[in-house]
Image (cartoon, rainbow, N blue to C red; front, side):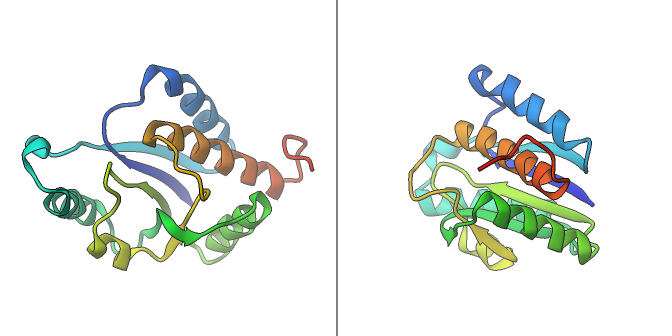
Length: 157
């Protein structure tokens, strides 16, 4: 199984780049993994919130393969414990999912068409985080889930 992290926005800011790269490298010991940054449309400042979400959504839907398992990071999604995320990832591997896509939306969230395509909606927290920081939290939590599945020492209660 491959794990894909997709994020709408700019490249990783320097304050998260090193951490994202480190956790991505660690995840690669368990799964093929890659990051894809979906660029914000060029005329984003001229678009309404709804139009921007639709335009970003169109790009995301073009990128999405028919066999991809889309997990939308969504504030109204279900929350998981670290162990719950580990079980979720293992269940996808057991189902022979080829590409598990974790998607971080743009500044205004995700278009309804994208949310309808999502097979799971996940909320990291009731707190609101900057999109750049969500990338780091996501990478770290997926790495933590991998170590839980292998019963390694990184995660402890």
